[in-house]
Amino acid sequence: MHLQKGENLLVHGGTSGIGVTAIQLAKALGAQVFATAGTDEKCRFCEELGAVKCVNYKTQNFEDVLKPVGMDAILDYIGGDYTAKNIRLLRTDGRLCFIASLGGAQTQFNILEVMSKRLTITGSMLAPRDAEFKAALAAEVEKYVWPLIATGQYKPIIYKTFSLSEAAEAHRLMESSEHIGKIVLVA
Image (cartoon, rainbow, N blue to C red; front, side, top):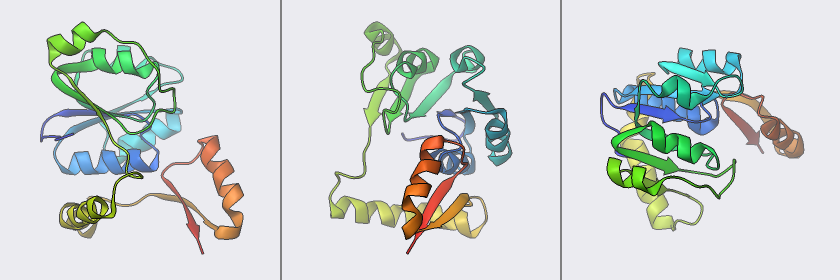
């Protein structure tokens, strides 16, 4: 995403494991972070974590709320109907990065808006990457993120830990979306 200090970042799913990580890391980089979440409690959590504003997508239209602000970058794992809204929210030279498509992989949007704003739309999946890429990524995490952990600027948020024999229960919790942060399985 090439996020820069002072830019506005929107993180969809701010209380997911990826969301809480993105909020903390972007804030540590000096970005203004905005988020979406599905309850007022989750929105308060995102704001306590460092988001300037979190929009409850179940009670408010995030596009309407955030349009006056504008975004330089958006991290989206929803896709679907969010895509056109994201494109309208992006400022000139904005970036939209897909990391999943929980709201659907198919969508429609105005290509002329992408062109006139010079937007970059990209996506990323870690699973199909080779071991060499993953090793390089781990080295970058060690170099850039580990110091943030050491200084307390980034704290992993563990919602609940399950034994491996409770994996089905952990999966049910994950599907319920009631958790904030990561669900961990231990052997």
